[in-house]
Length: 250
Figure 1 (spheres, helix red, strand yellow):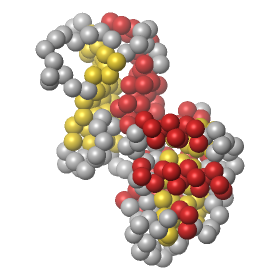
Figure 2: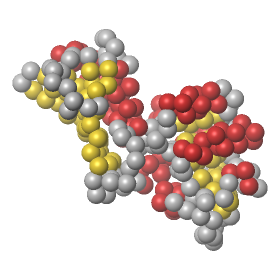
Figure 3: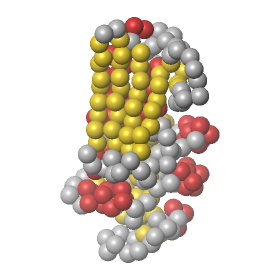
Figure 4: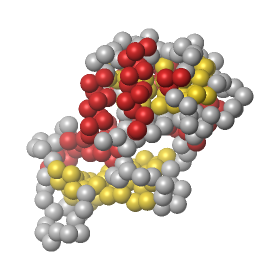
């Protein structure tokens, strides 16, 4: 049995995780953390991770990047594995996560969906086959409340592609101020925000007289919650290190 603490417990994703765990027999939620400490009748909710009295086998974080330092410190102090599912981290914060993983077990990925991680693998394979003959563009679409752009998932996909490109690539976020041809060594990243779009990502390989598009569409945020719970169960008992979906999906 994996005992879990949720940060962001009274938020949308926290509530989804609660409903998922209630229907599983391999884990349970022992405490939550949220500025909104409204009682949900199932487990205690604290305003800070440092106030939590219960011991846990893993923490699932669906909160806000500003809480990162406290979570990393708590994980190091208690040895509790940390599953980071929050997005929008700065490069400096990502470096903190990497450094903290030397002393703590941390699961960090830009997207908890198994489908997205499969898409990344397919994109790498397509890049290996198509080589430098196809231009690569990534288009991501999200709801109008999302703050960061491009999405962390779009960057994850671009990074995966760059692992197998024959030469270094640069990311192009904005072409409107330029009047020049597209260069071969760039990946265009484009963000669309509107309505209640959960998350859509298209990787476009544009060649001479043909276009190949790899796509993933999330129809519900539940897929991210399921991935986070699976990660928490997986991290139970793990030693210090940085883990991601590659380990989980094997």
